[in-house]
Length: 241
Image (cartoon, rainbow, N blue to C red; front, top):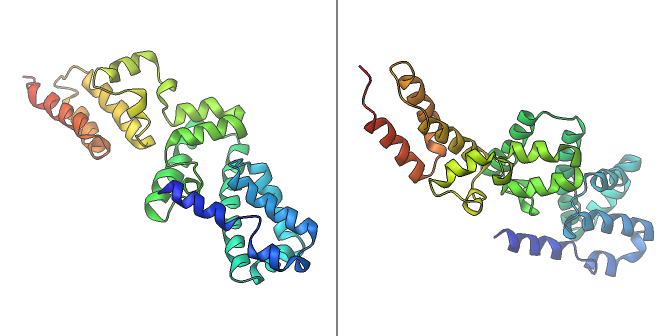
């Protein structure tokens, strides 16, 4: 579905669109280059926040002169303007976020919001253009466009390679691999890691209720296999005297 959407998006951004081929005199050569540059940041999968910022600055210059001109060319120009604003603003927002030198926990919260909460509620703009919902895609983006924060990002999204060997070995006993781990969301990964920690604990009279509560809090984020393991863990472990 994402591939179909991206193909449609590329078609909408086609250089040979009706907008420029039929009404060239209404846009200067420089304006056409600006608009095409805005679109190519998306269609060529560059996804540069710097280019997004430049694009938006050009469009909004002189009280939105170029943006208004593009919007006025209905329906093609209006649609192109809407798409440019939607995706370039999303890229600029992400770039601005990293400019503030965020901590790892804030990166995790931000990406959960973008790739999970927004995705479920109103749609994920970054996912539309191929930067999600798989967390690794944002990790690749950070390596290119926010390299100073790349390691923090990989750790925040819990990539398989960012996990300590002791964790991947433990998860491997339950059938997890780098391949099926990549299918999980950030919250699912974090929950699975918590479940793994719980399963390694020895139940005592003092910690049983706390561990049960922790398990109940994350149960909805776990796959069926891990849910079953947790239930068996508490069922098979006798209540300490």
